[in-house]
Length: 240
View 1 (cartoon, rainbow, N blue to C red):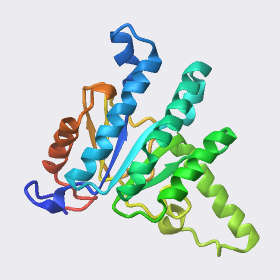
View 2 (cartoon, helix red, strand yellow):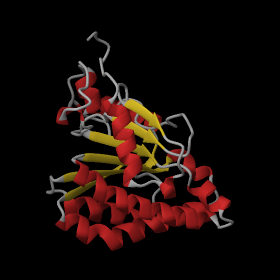
View 3 (cartoon, rainbow, N blue to C red):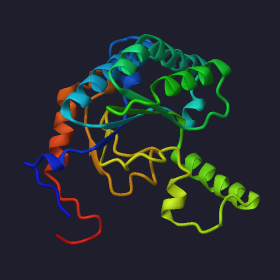
View 4 (cartoon, rainbow, N blue to C red):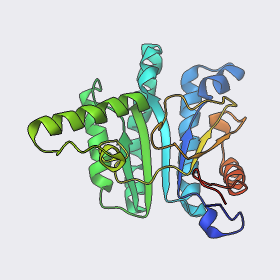
């Protein structure tokens, strides 16, 4: 199976992005890290608008990892506040424009107000089908896999599951259940690692690393990543 760089079928259906570089963007300007995160939210808004116009139907953004709890309480609180502000400011427009929001990640350890915001965003947009926006928040791929294993064990113990584990059964217990696997994973800031992001789902994703800090990321950078994706041949372990 190979991509045709000139055909519409080569457009990635699902793009996932590791948004990296907010802190370095702020430091280079002598600004507090919080300003980098705030500018990063503006990049998110522009990308959500532009990705749908390009024909992408699924966009997953890595917003807050299970490892980010190691950061200062001030920075963690800033990230949580930005999630609240994003939902409060953009939820009505996203809902009207047919965007469905899903939050990937563990709800354990989150405050009640954050949990309420997540529930409100998901329930308000649950019936939308035009564009899928998935935000990985308090997310780590290893944690996700462990939670899926626990779910299978608990269901088997209760008699709700027959114990026949295969890839389909396992994938159904992941946070991304019902979503297509990402075709393309982009990481900004020049770092070349996936940092515990979509380890199961990204098994055959094309990886593109761009040397641009996230707050400076534009739809033109997205087009550049898509062009790189379209230039590659995807064989999925087979031969052309």
